[in-house]
Length: 275
View 1 (cartoon, helix red, strand yellow):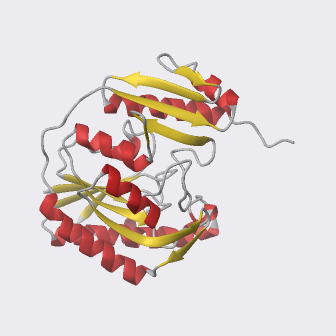
View 2 (spheres, rainbow, N blue to C red):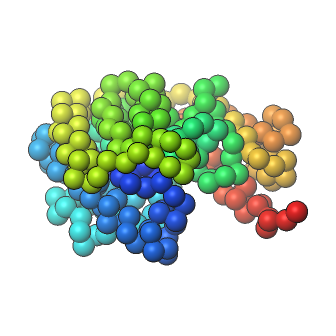
């Protein structure tokens, strides 16, 4: 059994603040170790449940956050940016299950450091008419390859979201959302136990099935009109409203590639603070 962990950082144990996940800051240096501890707990649980290989795909920001020298030796780590499938690189490599570790709620809803790809510029994303977090988008991509979502960890709002898009997955709430920048947090010793147990138990659901390839529509709403206009320059992307664009794709793989382009162009169109 070969399992993949897609490891994001905003939903890691103890993380509540922008600098906790911003590369180069002092808090980030601290939480890199805590984040690695969450991943190691996941690896330990998966292996206890029967996994023979674990691939950890770094999925946060620079995608160079985990401490390789402290990684459980039973795992291998895919690190660095510019991966075709980004957070889900490796989902097409024959894995039998995926764990969404350190995930968070989507843009436009309550949750610790809630966002979808861009920290603030995106106010909402919809997949086939349903409000979508990164977890929902990535679960749809996993389904296209017949890969079940085994476990989702993050704050309590992340777990509620996961119960909708991946009802068969175990969920682990490592913290309880109080606001976007505050949470009631469990210490790493407790969250490690919870993550390890959930991953071990979830291995009963591992096993790749038949994927389903179908067309999808994604719509993205921004907090400024010029970002939507910038994104609408991309062929196949059109304005739906003054701050909203939409596009159709023949598969979820193509939809996510187009989504990456849209977010990259919008990020590049953000100007400095004024007023």
